[in-house]
Length: 522
Image (cartoon, rainbow, N blue to C red; front, side, top):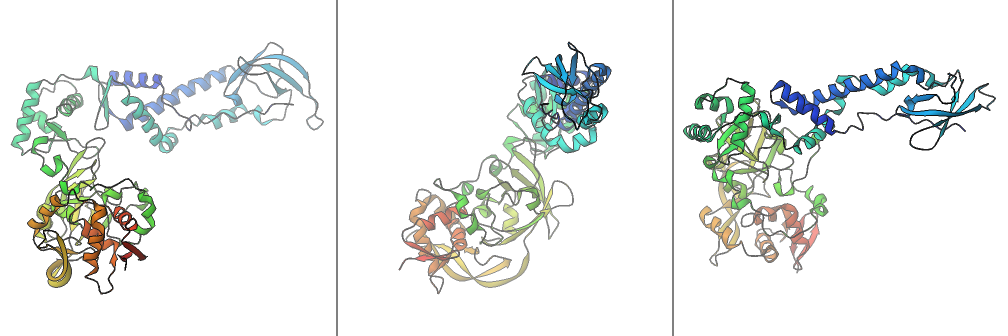
């Protein structure tokens, strides 16, 4: 019986970056003497692979006399190449007559391959799809650059970056690559001058060309190579911080960055959250108001789920820190970068159009720069903040939804005579839109901030029932919504919504009433 011939697999679906590919790229970078970005290297690599594949196929075309086509007659000892078997070659060892009345007269050849067992194939068979060699080559080649780049660039880019990163002879800055041995030497004198230039500019940010101009770094050679060399020297000196968004290189003096940029504000450090399965509470979290966004609940979102205009309900830790959460729902509103852990951008006040500096701290998932803006707008826990992308790249618009100041009954946090946190309903002058469940006025901010240190070593499990009692007394029904407890808990401890649900579920003193309502057991 004739063995089934397997179709050649698609070379782009099974693409792997080889050492030969890296040697080719290394050689190309040496030739052009210009730093090249990842996207262009992917294009160069695809073009080279297409060239090599065309050469391979042209070689096969030139040897058509030895190509296996079912219509041909073969001789014992003849060497054949099989396009449908990924162009394997073998030798004809035997020939016999075929036996199939539907096919008419034909022969069967037995072919030995260097590896694997012998296989049998038809010969002298005039009607067979494999007789059309050009069709086979066209189907398998898939050598259209635009099609390949459009369909496979992401996969190839990731594979290439992984391979390039493992090569010690190549360096990468802001997505550009170059051989280390060809870099221009930047001595300590130029780095000291760069520090002085940035200090005069209040720390920065300054672009690399601006720094080069002011420190009078020679640019006799390739200007891109000069910039790249200085970028690498600045990156390897811990005095400097690269803070530009993707595709843009900007430098800042690390010691001149705001405290809440250089280190995480203490109010954003999560409390002693035990290990627990937060996915267990995902259905409950969906029942909270849409304005609850928390970086501690970060999960990578699908691009289709991301919005360009989000309203969030603020919590106390972010207000006192001058920050916003960089939750999965919000991160696409802010600039990102290839490697920089901190990115400087521009906030725009949506009401006054005033611009001021903002910082994305990627690793810790927060955005800094709103301290003065919060104070000016008298933002309280529960105030609604509207965030959207600006018309200019690198700008983010924030607005507070101000309204005529009115006195509203809201929960108010204060210091009790026993030195503990206490909640009461009081009338407060409110000038922002707010979420009823999240709104908490602060009677005395200095006193409340001191409570943060006092509660630092008090386990959350011991606090949860006390908080429920405090909040339940403000409600005629005597129950508490989990979202209210989340906002209140974050007055003295940084906790996530799902951890609040975990605490409620595991307290022997609290019972669940349904939905997200809880009360102290009677």
